[in-house]
Structures are given as C-alpha cells and as structure tokens.
Image (tube, rainbow, N blue to C red; front, side, top):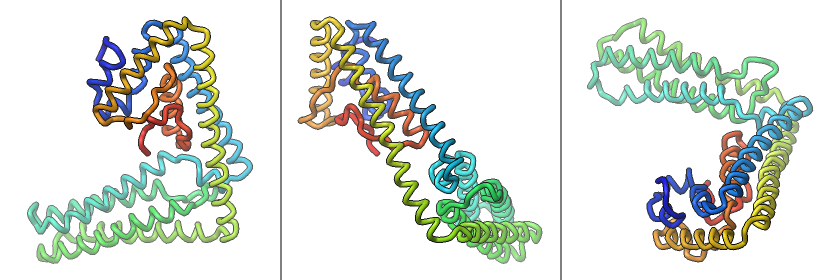
Length: 303
C-alpha cells in the first residue's frame, strides 16, 4: 500500500491492517512534514524502549523487595511455553481415544503413550521445583488442568489397549506412568502453593493488583508525555502543512466511518499521535503491561 493519501489507505485497509499498521494513516497525513513525521516516529520508538527499561528495573526491584508479588506479575515465557506444550500433548493423547481405531488401535495406543510422555516432560520443565521460585495460583491451576486431561488420557489409552486385545504393554505402562506423573506434579505444585500462609497469599494478591495498576499508570504517563511532544512538534511546524495533515485525517476518518471501521461520531486525532501510540501499545502488550489510556481511542486495539 505504498503511495497515496491517508484516505486512500483507509479505503483499502482491512480490519487487520488497521490493527497492526494504523500508524500508516499518520505517516501519509504528514507526508508534507517529513522532518516532523520522522522525529515523532523516532520519539515513539525511544518512548517504547524507555518503557521497557523502566518495567525491567521496576520488576527487578520488586523481585528483591517482594518476591512473592514479583512471581505473580513477572512474565515467565519458558514456564508458559512448558504448560502450553504439556496441554497440547495431553489433548492429543485424549483426542486419540475418540478416533475409535480409525488410525489403528495399536498405533493410537503408542501415539498416546508418546504424547503423554512428552506432556509429562514438558510439565516437569514448567513445574516450580526450585525453592527460589514461588508457586502461584496460576501454576496450581494450570498443573491441575493438565493433570486432569492427562489422567483421563492415560485411562483412555489403557481402554484403547484393551480394545486392541491387550495392546503394547510397554506403551500402556508409559501412558499410565505419564498420567501418574502429571497428577503427582500437580499435587506437588498445590502443596508448595499451600505452604505459603493464606494471609500472605491474600496480601500478595492485593499488592500485585496495586503494582499492576502502577504499571498501567506508567503506560498512560508515557502516552501523555508523548501526546505533549506531538502538540509541541505541530506547534513548531508550518501551520498550513499541519492544517493539510488534519484535513487528510478527517478525510481518512470519513472513509473508515463509511466502511464501519470507526464510529460515525469519532473525532479525528491530531496528526502524529499514532506514531507515539502504536509503539507504546505494542511494547506494553509485549512485556505484559496494562495497555492503558490510548492516545487515539477511536482506533484503539480491541482487548
């Protein structure tokens, strides 16, 4: 979609393009002010980097001062990936029971056993074994979801083996061992969770909500600061070019409203706002911060 006005882009953009590249509207509207456009784009990138650095420093300090609260808030991508892999593996093992032998009963038993073994291994990597890692409510919940499906899948595998006239004994043993291991790890996670006194858990949950609000306010503050920078940049720019950019955005909004992509009552934003809003919003979502107070609510990403 190179070239053309903001209205041209709005006429061709679908909902996905509007969600992931909506700043293109501002880039085109500010085509007659390239220095202002590029300065605001650089400002948006720098603001996003600053937000990331602030968040890393804040969570590092939180881990030293309140490790239990940090465990609730700190993104753990490796742990999440482990739970996801375990969930998918046990779901595959469970689903094979309902194939009713279409793939061959013995083959299904072996495949289920492999899936359960993989699921148990993934769960072992995700489980909170280390005393330094606090077991959270999310850990316990995910562990029991996986264990429930895993235990059911292990029993279903044994049933499939019976249908196959006994089935491969080694595969059945592996499947049952995987199911038992999953239940055992879920129990261990729950025990570790319950070792933290209830009063402490409740206080940590309240503090986590307070810190989460603080993180959201940091996003909102970065956006407010960016909005002020946009206003200052436009004030320093050629007035006729700024008015032309505003007219471009008004035309783009009219097109989007006609296509049902924005509300008919939506007020066009100031040119350049999306160059700040987009990188900050992407950074906030990527690092697990509340995506608070968008500068352009009419085009805000749906939660």
